[in-house]
Length: 231
Ligand SMILES: [Zn+2]
Image (cartoon, rainbow, N blue to C red; front, side, top):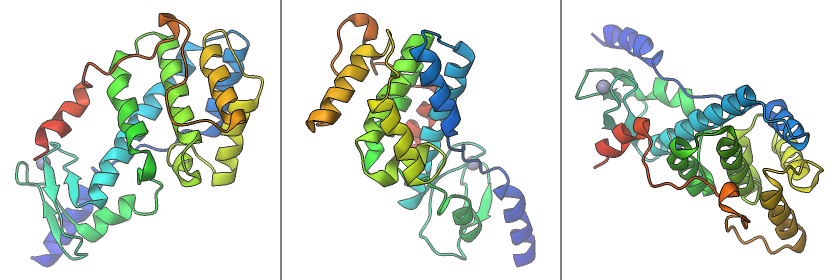
């Protein structure tokens, strides 16, 4: 019986998927092109959706740390007690895994949201309202501001590389010559605040509605299942 369950756990664990970190070169390319006045829609979408998926994985993994797993088959939330030999079983669809197997998929994978929980959830909430490439670019830019000012350990949850490599990239974006018509207001404010040491975590100043961030008045469709399953 136990062997049978172990076999089932091995099969079921394959349904668990965490989205990967965004490669540094993609973000650098995005800003380099943007600085030349080129908004590569395909690249913007690639990064914007990749960041969205990574943020969702971070939010979900952080909940797993607190004892709540989202069933990968039906999104029902399942509680666990952090006992290695415990079987976590979905009451809705019967999906079941050994907690030790599940833990292996997310522990030490840069998936804990840390001190930037508001940034991850802010991106996920605003994402469905960002329709144009410009809006998506501004949203990506907003998130990068948030994690740049956060603790060093936070940025590597989103972007691939060592903490030093990732911070070097974010410093380049903040201080470098990658200012653009679309991002100029954001970047100028970001740079000024960084340089003056007065960066207090507020959203960058905006000059017009055009550079405004999408508002979070609509919930993302895919997040509704998570929200509704919360107790
Ligand atoms: Zn289920």
